[in-house]
Image (cartoon, rainbow, N blue to C red; front, top):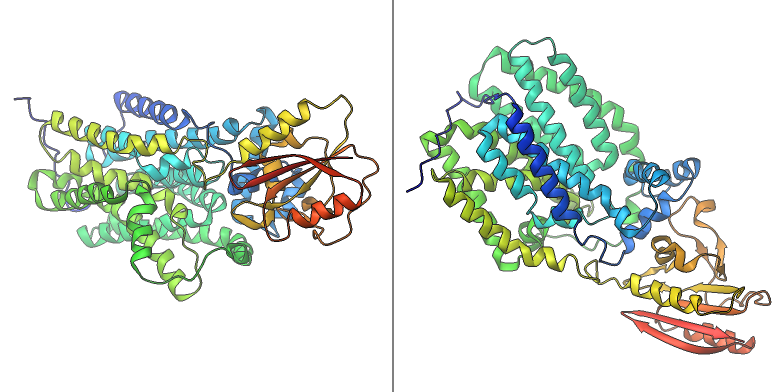
Length: 518
């Protein structure tokens, strides 16, 4: 029989154990971070870009004044993320891979910080298991292949929580550095909110953690820590208030959210899609482990030293979801499973508490491997060409690239952007934002006012029923879009009247691509 792992020493009440971070823990965190980066990054270049990533690149390619103007009209909630990527692409050439690479890096760093966090609360073994499990949460694996803010907001949530735990330690010990840690907490809370405003729901979860600390011990040190937290949260809230007011006025961009009600579909989204999307009925496995981890920590005497980890992780899993669901029910729909991605590492912590509750590490390792095997098909599915909302953008862009490459030198091409597949209220200019080389140098026949001049993500365009503009200065016309009742039928009629003939057609996914010559 393998030697049992040493029991975790009990910490009194709900006081965090306050274990110091030694060199071995830092090395373990670094190894987990590299593991998370490699797992997430591998194959991230395969899926076609989709509407959200097209929106990202529509914003990121603007000058800073143009971006500043845009976020005051639309997508302000992602403004800080757009700024980060704008600076990233100042030094890194664009491709779908480099678009997603910062997210993969953020997932790796979040996993590494999870190790540092849990080591202080539950010991090094549980910390390493929690870090590895963070790299196995399907929702976070998806976020790591996305050119969106979900992964970076997850990193901010874990970092904010780690700073909270250290600040609590320093305050309890009356260390002079406590003030610096609370200032750091305030700054990170502001940055987290700017990255994605939902992320600061973690601050509300921390209120529950602080409350448990005070109720659990009734010590003056805990009350003093609570006052420091309240001051930091208040300052961060006041700094973010103008930003929150601005983005709350942009909720009209969530027009795609349907009616919101308590039903089986919502339960499916919360308990499966939110963190374990793709697992289907197998989502019962991680949820059973979450419950087991909570119960074992509270009931088994030798595990009660890990109660601090429970007091920190469980509120972050529960509070943000409850708040968003309640607001969506009572005010207006604001819930989407992707918006709660930042809770993923804390779900991993609860599962880690279950896996490390047994006294034999070999059992934990076998269970960890089994969970990784369960997630592997999801990881593979997330790295197929059409993994993102069924997108076939890359294939459509490749048709244009190949077709234009075969043209005689000096051919003057024009483009008519048709309806965007799955998003017919937008046009395929989003595809051009994600795959700019395929559309470079083409004259835009449907453009009235550019997105930049409007301060919007997409341009104002002519209706297909409007007269076709002069085409005397072009040699070839392309149509890229989804087939509708009007398009490309009415465009083809106008082209024939102007002396153009459709000479070739392609179909890829829901895209119709036409090439017209005189």
